[in-house]
Image (cartoon, rainbow, N blue to C red; front, side):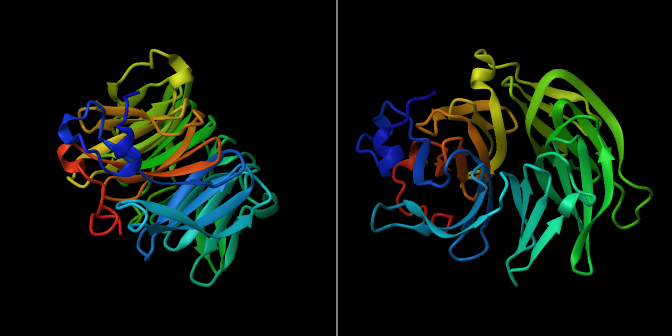
Length: 359
């Protein structure tokens, strides 16, 4: 990993400026020991003031934090202020916020949704009724549907009707599903253990037939760990350290090759972000607590750095805005990180939380 400037990355400023021998690309805006053990997933709600951060862990807790600016303590810094926590009585493996409702995928296969407006709670697949039988590792929205992917090798399509969510379709994909993304609004890309499976999605305005498996890329020795939609393509990461890009027909358009260190530096999660100058990056969390940023679309590595002192795997990443993103690890820590594009635009971190984009 690149050596970060300790003064800038933790203090927000450096007296050496552009003459500093160390990197000014990263500023750690906040950190919080959030869970006892693995933090498996993150979600956010940016529209409110202050923004809210949600986390789920192997300690069965779902926690809510307010992201607060702390200019009096350090210009540009922030804190994650605990608001509430809920015991799910099962390990929390995935979560996403959809239209004011937080959906949480659990290890035994249940999905629990919390609606913020009226504190209503919904069970998707309660007591084995049309629900998953393995860990729910990915949840996303498709029009009026919620789609979930699970280690039980199925993808399920849920709709809300008369106060409940019902499973309209349980689609076998024959491989444990680890991540989902949608490209071109018509293709569901299922990143799996041993394959990448393409599922056709009917036009929501004029549906013709149910979603069906239309393509399967067999990868018998690979475990996919993330999937991100990018300009009608799918970026998929693997535990081997590879990053690949596939088009809408499943044709491989880019392959980074395996990490020289193999799974020790394998990629455990990915996320797309945009910095304050509009530059797009792919952020990749690694097995050793490090994070790498790749410029898009070139995939030029901008920086690789140690994000978590535990050196345990980065388990989830979540974009906030204007270069800010969240990272969590297997030791219970959440960090708020800012990616700065150049030495020149990162001379002082002060102000980026107040008037600099995030708040």
